[in-house]
Amino acid sequence: MGGESAAKARILVVDDSKLMRKAATKMLGDEFDVVTADDGVDAWEQLGRDASIQVVFTDLNMPRMDGYELLRQVRGASDGGVAGLPLIVVTGAENDEAARMKALDMGATDFITKPFTTSDLVARARAHSTYQRVTRQLQSQVQVDALTGLANKAGFLDRLRQDIAYASRHQQPLCLVRLEVEDFHRFFLHNGREVAEGLVLQIARLLRGRIRKEDTGGRVALGSFALSLPGGQPEGIAAMVARIQAEVTANPPLHEGEPVAVKLHAAVLSPLTDGVLTPEEAMDACQARLDVARESGAAVLVPPPAVVAPVAATEPEVAQAEAPEEAAAPAVPSVAPAPPVSVDAALEALKAGRGSELAPQLPALVVRILPLLRLLGPRQRAQLIEFLQK
Image (tube, helix red, strand yellow):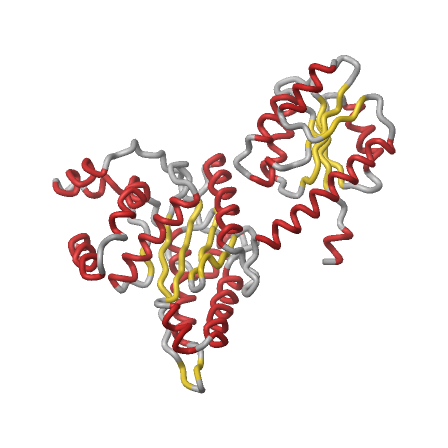
């Protein structure tokens, strides 16, 4: 906590004038970590890759992308952290009242007029960076599961939304994992709160020990967890999850001195780069895979080979941990989104023996039929699974 409070807030200054960028850097540099951009295009790229930026000062008149367009991009960003950034418009003599009102209507946070003094610039930077820091701290507290320290469901969905947007924009692979303790409610009632919470904490520690700093782990229900893994290889992730399942099985919780058998079911959904699914739909699609895995007794349900390129077998930790370059797994090539297909057309394709054609559409199809699947009883689901496995 002390290190965070001592760190300088990062300020982005956007201006096509090299002189103005140098002046702002000199005025703010003693108290803030200042980064600069020479127009809106450069600024937008920096905001996309640097989540530590807390305040933006931008000129209005710039080449390629002006301040108005940058403001529109920021306020319309799918990443909530970017969309909510304080954006202070720097206006000059050439900017009349109408220009200022236009920027205000588009969501400008504040204004400062050239020529400005050091005290004017620092005062605004202090006020807005402090507000941004407090807002982020409060948001993180609201989005954290109190027991495990992992993200709660709201926090996980918010991060997953950012990961999907980034993966889609940069055509990078993204994997979603769901894990669920079998019949956790019964486990809680039979063994008590202390034992149940001990199991939850055990799983949380295992997850935290396996994921990288860029990954996100969440507790999305009492006995359910989820992982968002940017750049992850599905097969390596499946092996990592299988390792966690094995550790939970090999080290069961104790109740009155006796071990209590636990089953941890899991499913992997990938890739999530085509922009078809919202975070909620992706979670539902992965949950549907998990339901099938649980009913069929499979440990992990991995996407079919047609969806992702196969990779060589690796140790679980190597597939996910930050490893030397020679141990890094090859990147998954981007997959072009297939045209939408109706449920009726999908059934006809299955009937005709052309099921492999549906692999790219599987997540979207699962989301469409999920409400119907949840109406089926255990026996009906078992019959459906038996049919699909033929």
